[in-house]
Length: 295
Ligand code: G1P
Image (cartoon, rainbow, N blue to C red):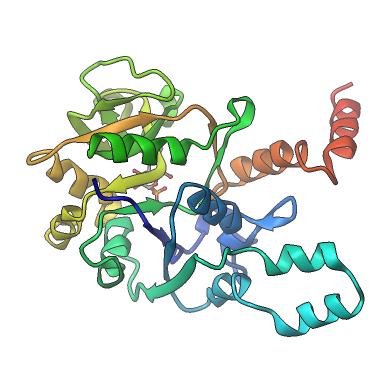
């Protein structure tokens, strides 16, 4: 069975849901506590065995690549001052055996188009897609959902799409999967029979939403080449995956943790609270502050 070693992270979006903050700073660089959102996503990929990160980016977003590059002056200065902890934080973001490369998406034609832009770097391999807005929080479960999904893929050989239930009024914000009514328990996967991008509530086959983590067969790239614009006039990854279901299997992997959508203001603030309550430097102060707030 092929292992998943490459992950595509589309970062060319305009971030219109978090304006004005994202006017000149890429939304992926907005911090959650002390790290940009994109760093959590790349750390999640690395923890799941990914070795090659492929960013699909555009002009005005080079700070993302810079963040994962070496900063000589800063490192020299921190080293000279003996600030070893801070030095480790800026130096050790990427393990030596993980690479980051970037391709450009010249037109904003949708997620499916962004993934297709990475095709020359994906080559003939099966691959992961990780959406940078979505932070996957392990919470009490203390397990990495993406690593669990990679394990399910490598055991079954079937492409995996991470899902989680959302309130019914939110189904029109997401790709929604139909597992023929099967009740998929957290940590388990079930075959998808149908998927729809941002359906109206009355047309939604379930409330299981795609939360931005995919492990996909290479064949999807071929299907993307002929995928026509769909919801919102964009070339949708969900539509290519729906086409794939005519010839192969895909499974919905029900996550154990919880997703925080940092591409919208409320989700971003929630993530800062949750991660702030866990960070050793902020946990005590945050807990005290929140307790005081809710008195
Ligand atoms: C994309 C996908 C959608 C998925 C969502 C998760 O939509 O097309 O299927 O549910 O990401 O965030 P977008 O948020 O880019 O409109």
